[in-house]
Amino acid sequence: MSKQTILYIEDNEYNRKIVRQLVGRTSYRLIEAIDGESGVALAQQELPNLILMDVQLPKMSGLDATRVLKADPRTGHIPIIVITSFALSGDREKASAAGANSYLAKPYSPRELLALVREFLPES
Ligand SMILES: [Mg+2]
Image (cartoon, rainbow, N blue to C red; front, side, top):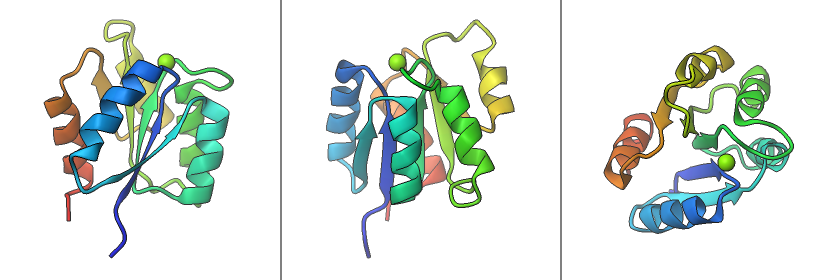
């Protein structure tokens, strides 16, 4: 059986490194995109099992990318966890309105992130 794939869309190299190391210790396969446009394109091409979506992204925001992917019949079923630094600015409501399945506020612990991922994608 092929590995379950997580697409992480995040412009910050440091955050990508942290999550890459974290996912490297699991059975998941990680693919990455560094802006909203290429993230949407990669999701449509690879049809990952789960998407981790930063909100603040170049070219297309994470919320707009979430709306595009949720409106696309090819990708609408893929769970999207939106990650933001702005826990107090109503981003949870905005993420939910955009169609996100869940939400994680920075700073988060690796344990929290993995627990949330496993809720949507039990490790096989
Ligand atoms: Mg960002």
